[in-house]
Image (cartoon, rainbow over all chains, first blue to last red; front, side, top):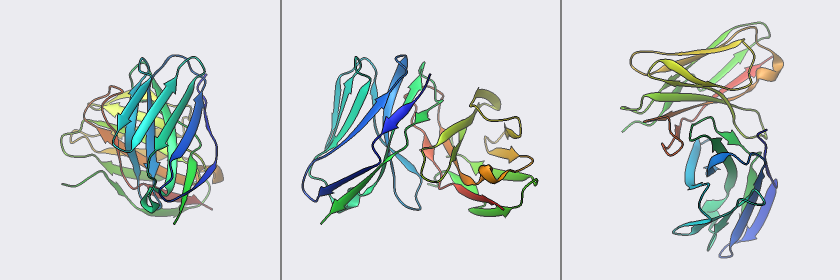
Length: 111
Length: 114
């Protein structure tokens, strides 16, 4: 079955690194995504990783995938106050767009 | 360039009523997906349409239906509204239907059922 879990809240100081974790249960997941949602704004795709990859880096963002443990993480380097938002982990199966989202992690960045 | 637009932005209905939500995709995008986001939770997939055909359906009752028009805009209809239907309804458009075809989300329609 499909189930994506995340911790609810993370607080970091500005300039530190943030690590947001996610676990999923469907081993046939093809793509795994990280979305950002700011108050009053729609969801924004930050990055995605194909299930046969272990790592993907994009500027300040690093995604790590441990397929054996079904664990996905998003590391944000040099976290800024503008990174404060809710971050959703999501998966799709079979390369299609029926995307299953996690419950979201609220990231609070303290100046 | 306009992004995904949704109307109305807010809506208040009473139990048992019917509601129609509208979505206009980004120009050139042929796929539209609908999601329901209950407060404090992640979005849940409702439908995907591509080239006016339903390509995917989530675990929602038959009270939920949708369609896509020749100009690729879409409507989501919900009949016999329940209190639990109160949520933010998000529309997303993409050029294609593969997992790598980025979905662009609209700002959503906030539905309140009293």
